[in-house]
Each structure stands twice: as structure tokens, then as C-alpha cells.
Length: 76
Image (tube, rainbow, N blue to C red; front, side, top):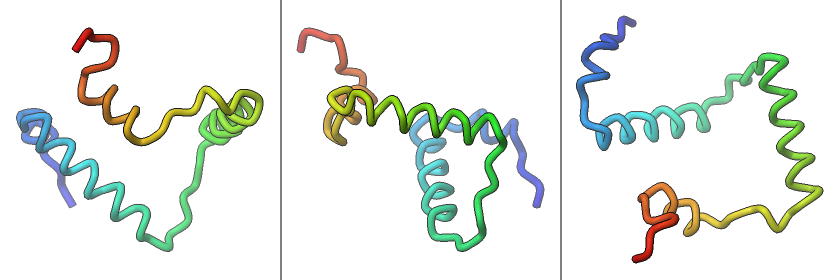
């Protein structure tokens, strides 16, 4: 399979996000094991430990999307 990166770069952000979402959905449905690099495993472990130590730092889905939508830090 050949992917034209120049074509992907020319897409609007909304279309890029649609593609990323479709890829994540496909990956999550796959039974193929995901092989992590050592640094990725270390990062996942570090983040897990950080959340266990300070669970109040977690945000819910609504807050995540509020931040993604760009309203974080604005006086709306």
C-alpha cells in the first residue's frame, strides 16, 4: 500500500481527524498484538503511576473535548 503523504498534508484538519479516528477504531478492533518500543512502555508505566499517585489530576471526556475544541483558558 502506498500512502501519498503530500495528499494527506493537504487535507483540512477535520478530514485528517476523521482518518485518525478511523485508524484508531481499526487498530482497536484488531486482534493483532501491539508491540511497544521500550520507551513507549516506560512512558505508559510512568503515566499509570502518576495517575495512581494523584487521581484528582484526571479529566473526564467532556473536559477533554472542551480543551480540544479550544475553549480551555478562554473567558467564554
